Length: 99
Image (tube, rainbow, N blue to C red; front, side, top):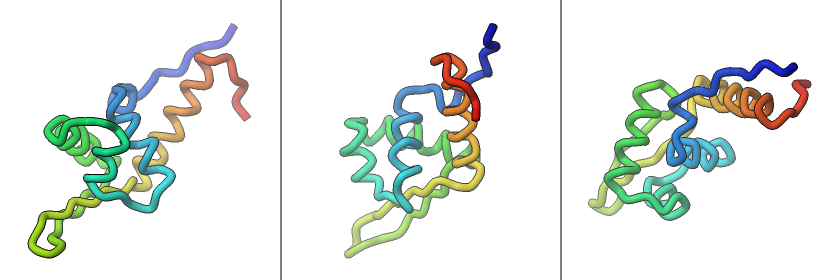
């Protein structure tokens, strides 16, 4: 019988998982792109990005472009490891064998 691995509650939230899923395939992304791809409100997206940043999963840079605020996000090594562990744990729920 398969034993289920615990799922990281931080990544198990739908929007945070969407943010991480998007960012693991990109070097970095601007806040506006993440907002567009996730269909999240700016306020909710900000809150969820901050939770991921506080956990050490994301690096967030705030700069300016032509006098407008520019926020970019990238996944940290810790974030990539957490995401990969989450995917591996999820496979135990789907009946996939570990390799």
